[in-house]
Length: 72
Image (cartoon, rainbow, N blue to C red; front, side, top):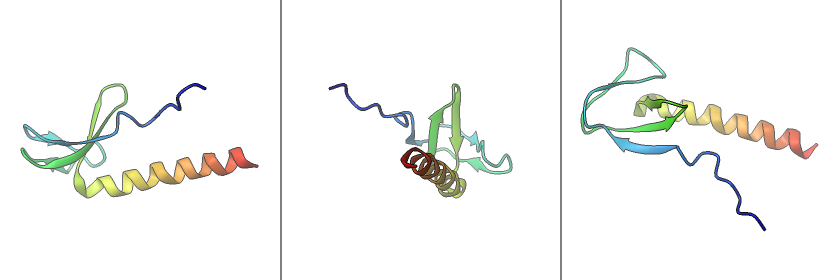
């Protein structure tokens, strides 16, 4: 049996080495040493800790919607 693919393997928590902008809200910055959510799409996307919860909630809701549609 083939291994199950992890389609979110690029999701990770990183610690910023330099100041970065938040891609979810351009008025937010990520300071050096601050942990933040990051993923590749195809370039690197950085999301500050203030926005990460809502971004992950949208992703979780979408996955649940797809799961429910598949079960019909």
